Length: 164
Image (cartoon, rainbow, N blue to C red; front, side, top):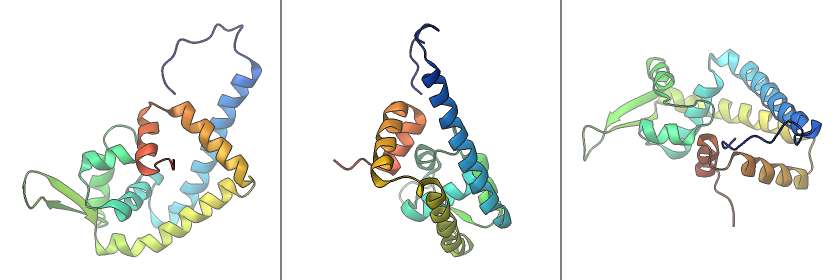
C-alpha cells in the first residue's frame, strides 16, 4: 500500500484492522491453493506466473517481465534462471542489439500452457465463485485504489489495463 502518514491509533477502527487481515488471509488461502495445484508440476506460483506472462507477451526482456509480474518483487532473474535450466524458458539475443536478451517459452514450456491455464482457471473460480459480478467489480475497484502507485499496482495495471 502506498506510504502514508499513519492515522493516530484512536482514529483507526477495528474495521481497518479486520480489512487488513481479511486481505492477508484471502491472499494466503489463494497462494496455498495455487501452490498445491502447481506442486505436481514442480512449479512455484512465481514460476507459473512468469510462464503465463511470457505466453501472452513474449518475447520480453528480463526487465519487462519484472514489470509485469506480481508474485515476485524485485528482479525475477533467479526464477527465470531456474526456468531456463528446467528447459521451459529460452534466452535469445536481440537481432538489432545483440546485448539485449529476450525471453520466450521453449516447446516444453509451451506444452505446459494448457495445464497452467486450467490451473489458473480453477484458482480464479475458487476465488470468485462465491461472489456476484457486482461484488467482484466493487472489490477490484477498491483493491486497485488501495494499491495504486505501488510496484504491484503498476504491474497489475500493465497486465490488466482498466477498461474506460
